[in-house]
Length: 322
Image 1 (cartoon, rainbow, N blue to C red):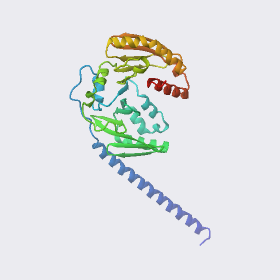
Image 2: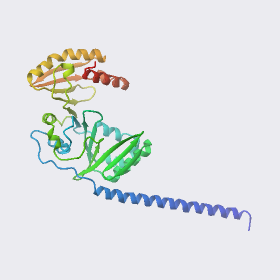
Image 3: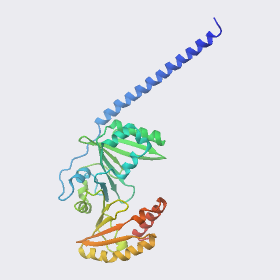
Image 4: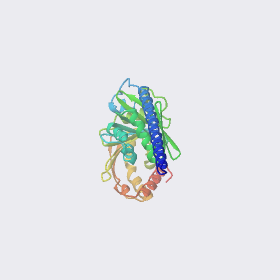
């Protein structure tokens, strides 16, 4: 046999072997994907269903109550948006991994979300949308590949890992909607109408205007230190950086609200000195509510590192440390 034929035959045999090996690997990969798809489809049928509310409290926005009535009364605040995606969701869908078609499907099906505030950070988040569990899984895997993290989907729980930290996302259903709850365990066992046991929060819910672009409400008392008068909570309506924000502080009486108004100008002057920024603030009374319009342009124009330092100074002031 010609000497050049033998090596040629060997090369052909090797290529054929590699092709068979590659085909076998592709087959195994395809079988693994098909198996996972079957498991995810079965998992989707076992997702827990959010409880329905038994009664809508008088004066409370129906949409917010139906969405969040199952939260525990230990919730301190809630923030939401009227017709735009919450900032945290905007950030997620702006990342490179979100170009994956499964992530785009989640973005197209997104229907709303809330930030949930507790006594201590971090916040929890609740998102609603029309989506398939398979897209949640595929988008999570894209996240893990792109950012060097990890993603694991088990019955009702998606665990995301990044830089040594894990975040758990509880998944459930409400009718045709898929619900995603980003929480570290403080929500606890989900049960209907628990939020109704928080009287202060219910009172704020009766006055909040959820048609505003960005709204936030909190039952925290943030006026005792700067104004010398305790409050029952506050509502903030945020606007574009060039437009004033509206703060509405609720007091226990008109007398308290009047005292808070008298203390506003000295408090603003002290804040300007401590923070090193100029603040344009106008305030007026509406019964037992102090309404303040605050131009934050001088704040938002600062670079990120200065904004972080300002936030730390503001936190110290509200805690009576500055």
